[in-house]
Length: 299
Image (cartoon, rainbow, N blue to C red; front, side, top):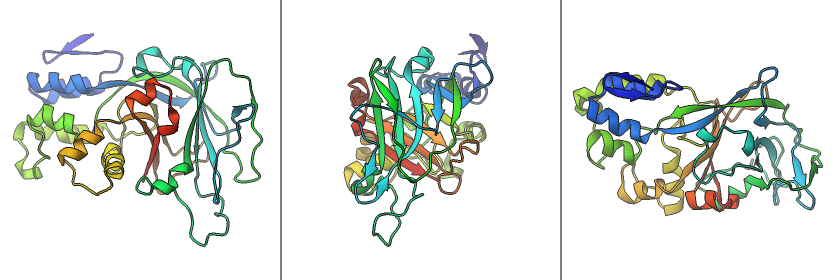
C-alpha cells in the first residue's frame, strides 16, 4: 500500500484508487474507493504461464450432457471455458466457485435459424430468446470428454488465456455511485450543472475506463450504459428511466459473472465492436445455479 493525496492506494493495481486520490476530495475519494471491486482480467497467455481460461476450441462435457442449442433455431457457439481453481483467489467474488469449470455458450448468428426468414438473435428484452445464451458448470472431478461438435457453426480458434487480479470500478450512472459522489439517489444533473469539483474526475474516469477486455467478476465495463439497467428493465417488464428507484433497486441485485470482448485471435466479433456480458444474482452464484444467468450484448 502507498499513500496518495491522503488516500491509501493498493499498489498491485492502483488505477482507480489513484484517480480518486488525484481528482476527488478526501471524503468522496474514500466513498468511491469503497465501491471498487477486485476482478480477474483474462489476457493472452504467454509461454510457460498457467492457463486459466480458453476462448473457442472444443469444450469437454460430462457424459449425457448434450451440446446446448436453441430449439427451432440451431446450436449455440462455444465461447469460453474458465477453470475456477486457476483464477487468483483475490479476484474471485464471494460465492464464486473455487473449483470446477464454467462453460459459456452463445447463439452468435453464424447459422441460419431453421425455417425462419428473420435472423435470430439473443435480446435481454425478449425472454423467449434467453435460451440462446447458456452457462454450464461442471463440478470438479466430473468425468468429461471432448464434445461432439455440431456440423455448424465451426468452432472458434482456440486461444489460451492467463489470469491476473485488477481493480474494477462501477459505471458512474449506477445508484451506489450517485449516492457516494452526489449524496443523493437522483440522476446525474446536466453536464453544466454537475458540481465543479466532480468534473475533472468524470473526465478522467471516462478516459481511464475505456478498456473492456475479458473479465471474470468485478464491475462490468459497459459500452452503452449500465448492463445492470438492461437486465433490470427486462425483469420489471417496463422501460424505466435511469435513476428510477425501482430500476435502481433491481439493478443492484445483479453481479457481473463474466464479460467477453471481441477477440481477433479467436475470430470472435460481436456486432460492431461489441461485448458479451453474463450477469447473475449473488444468491444464485453462491448456490452454483448458473441456469439463471442473463446475457446482455452491447455494441
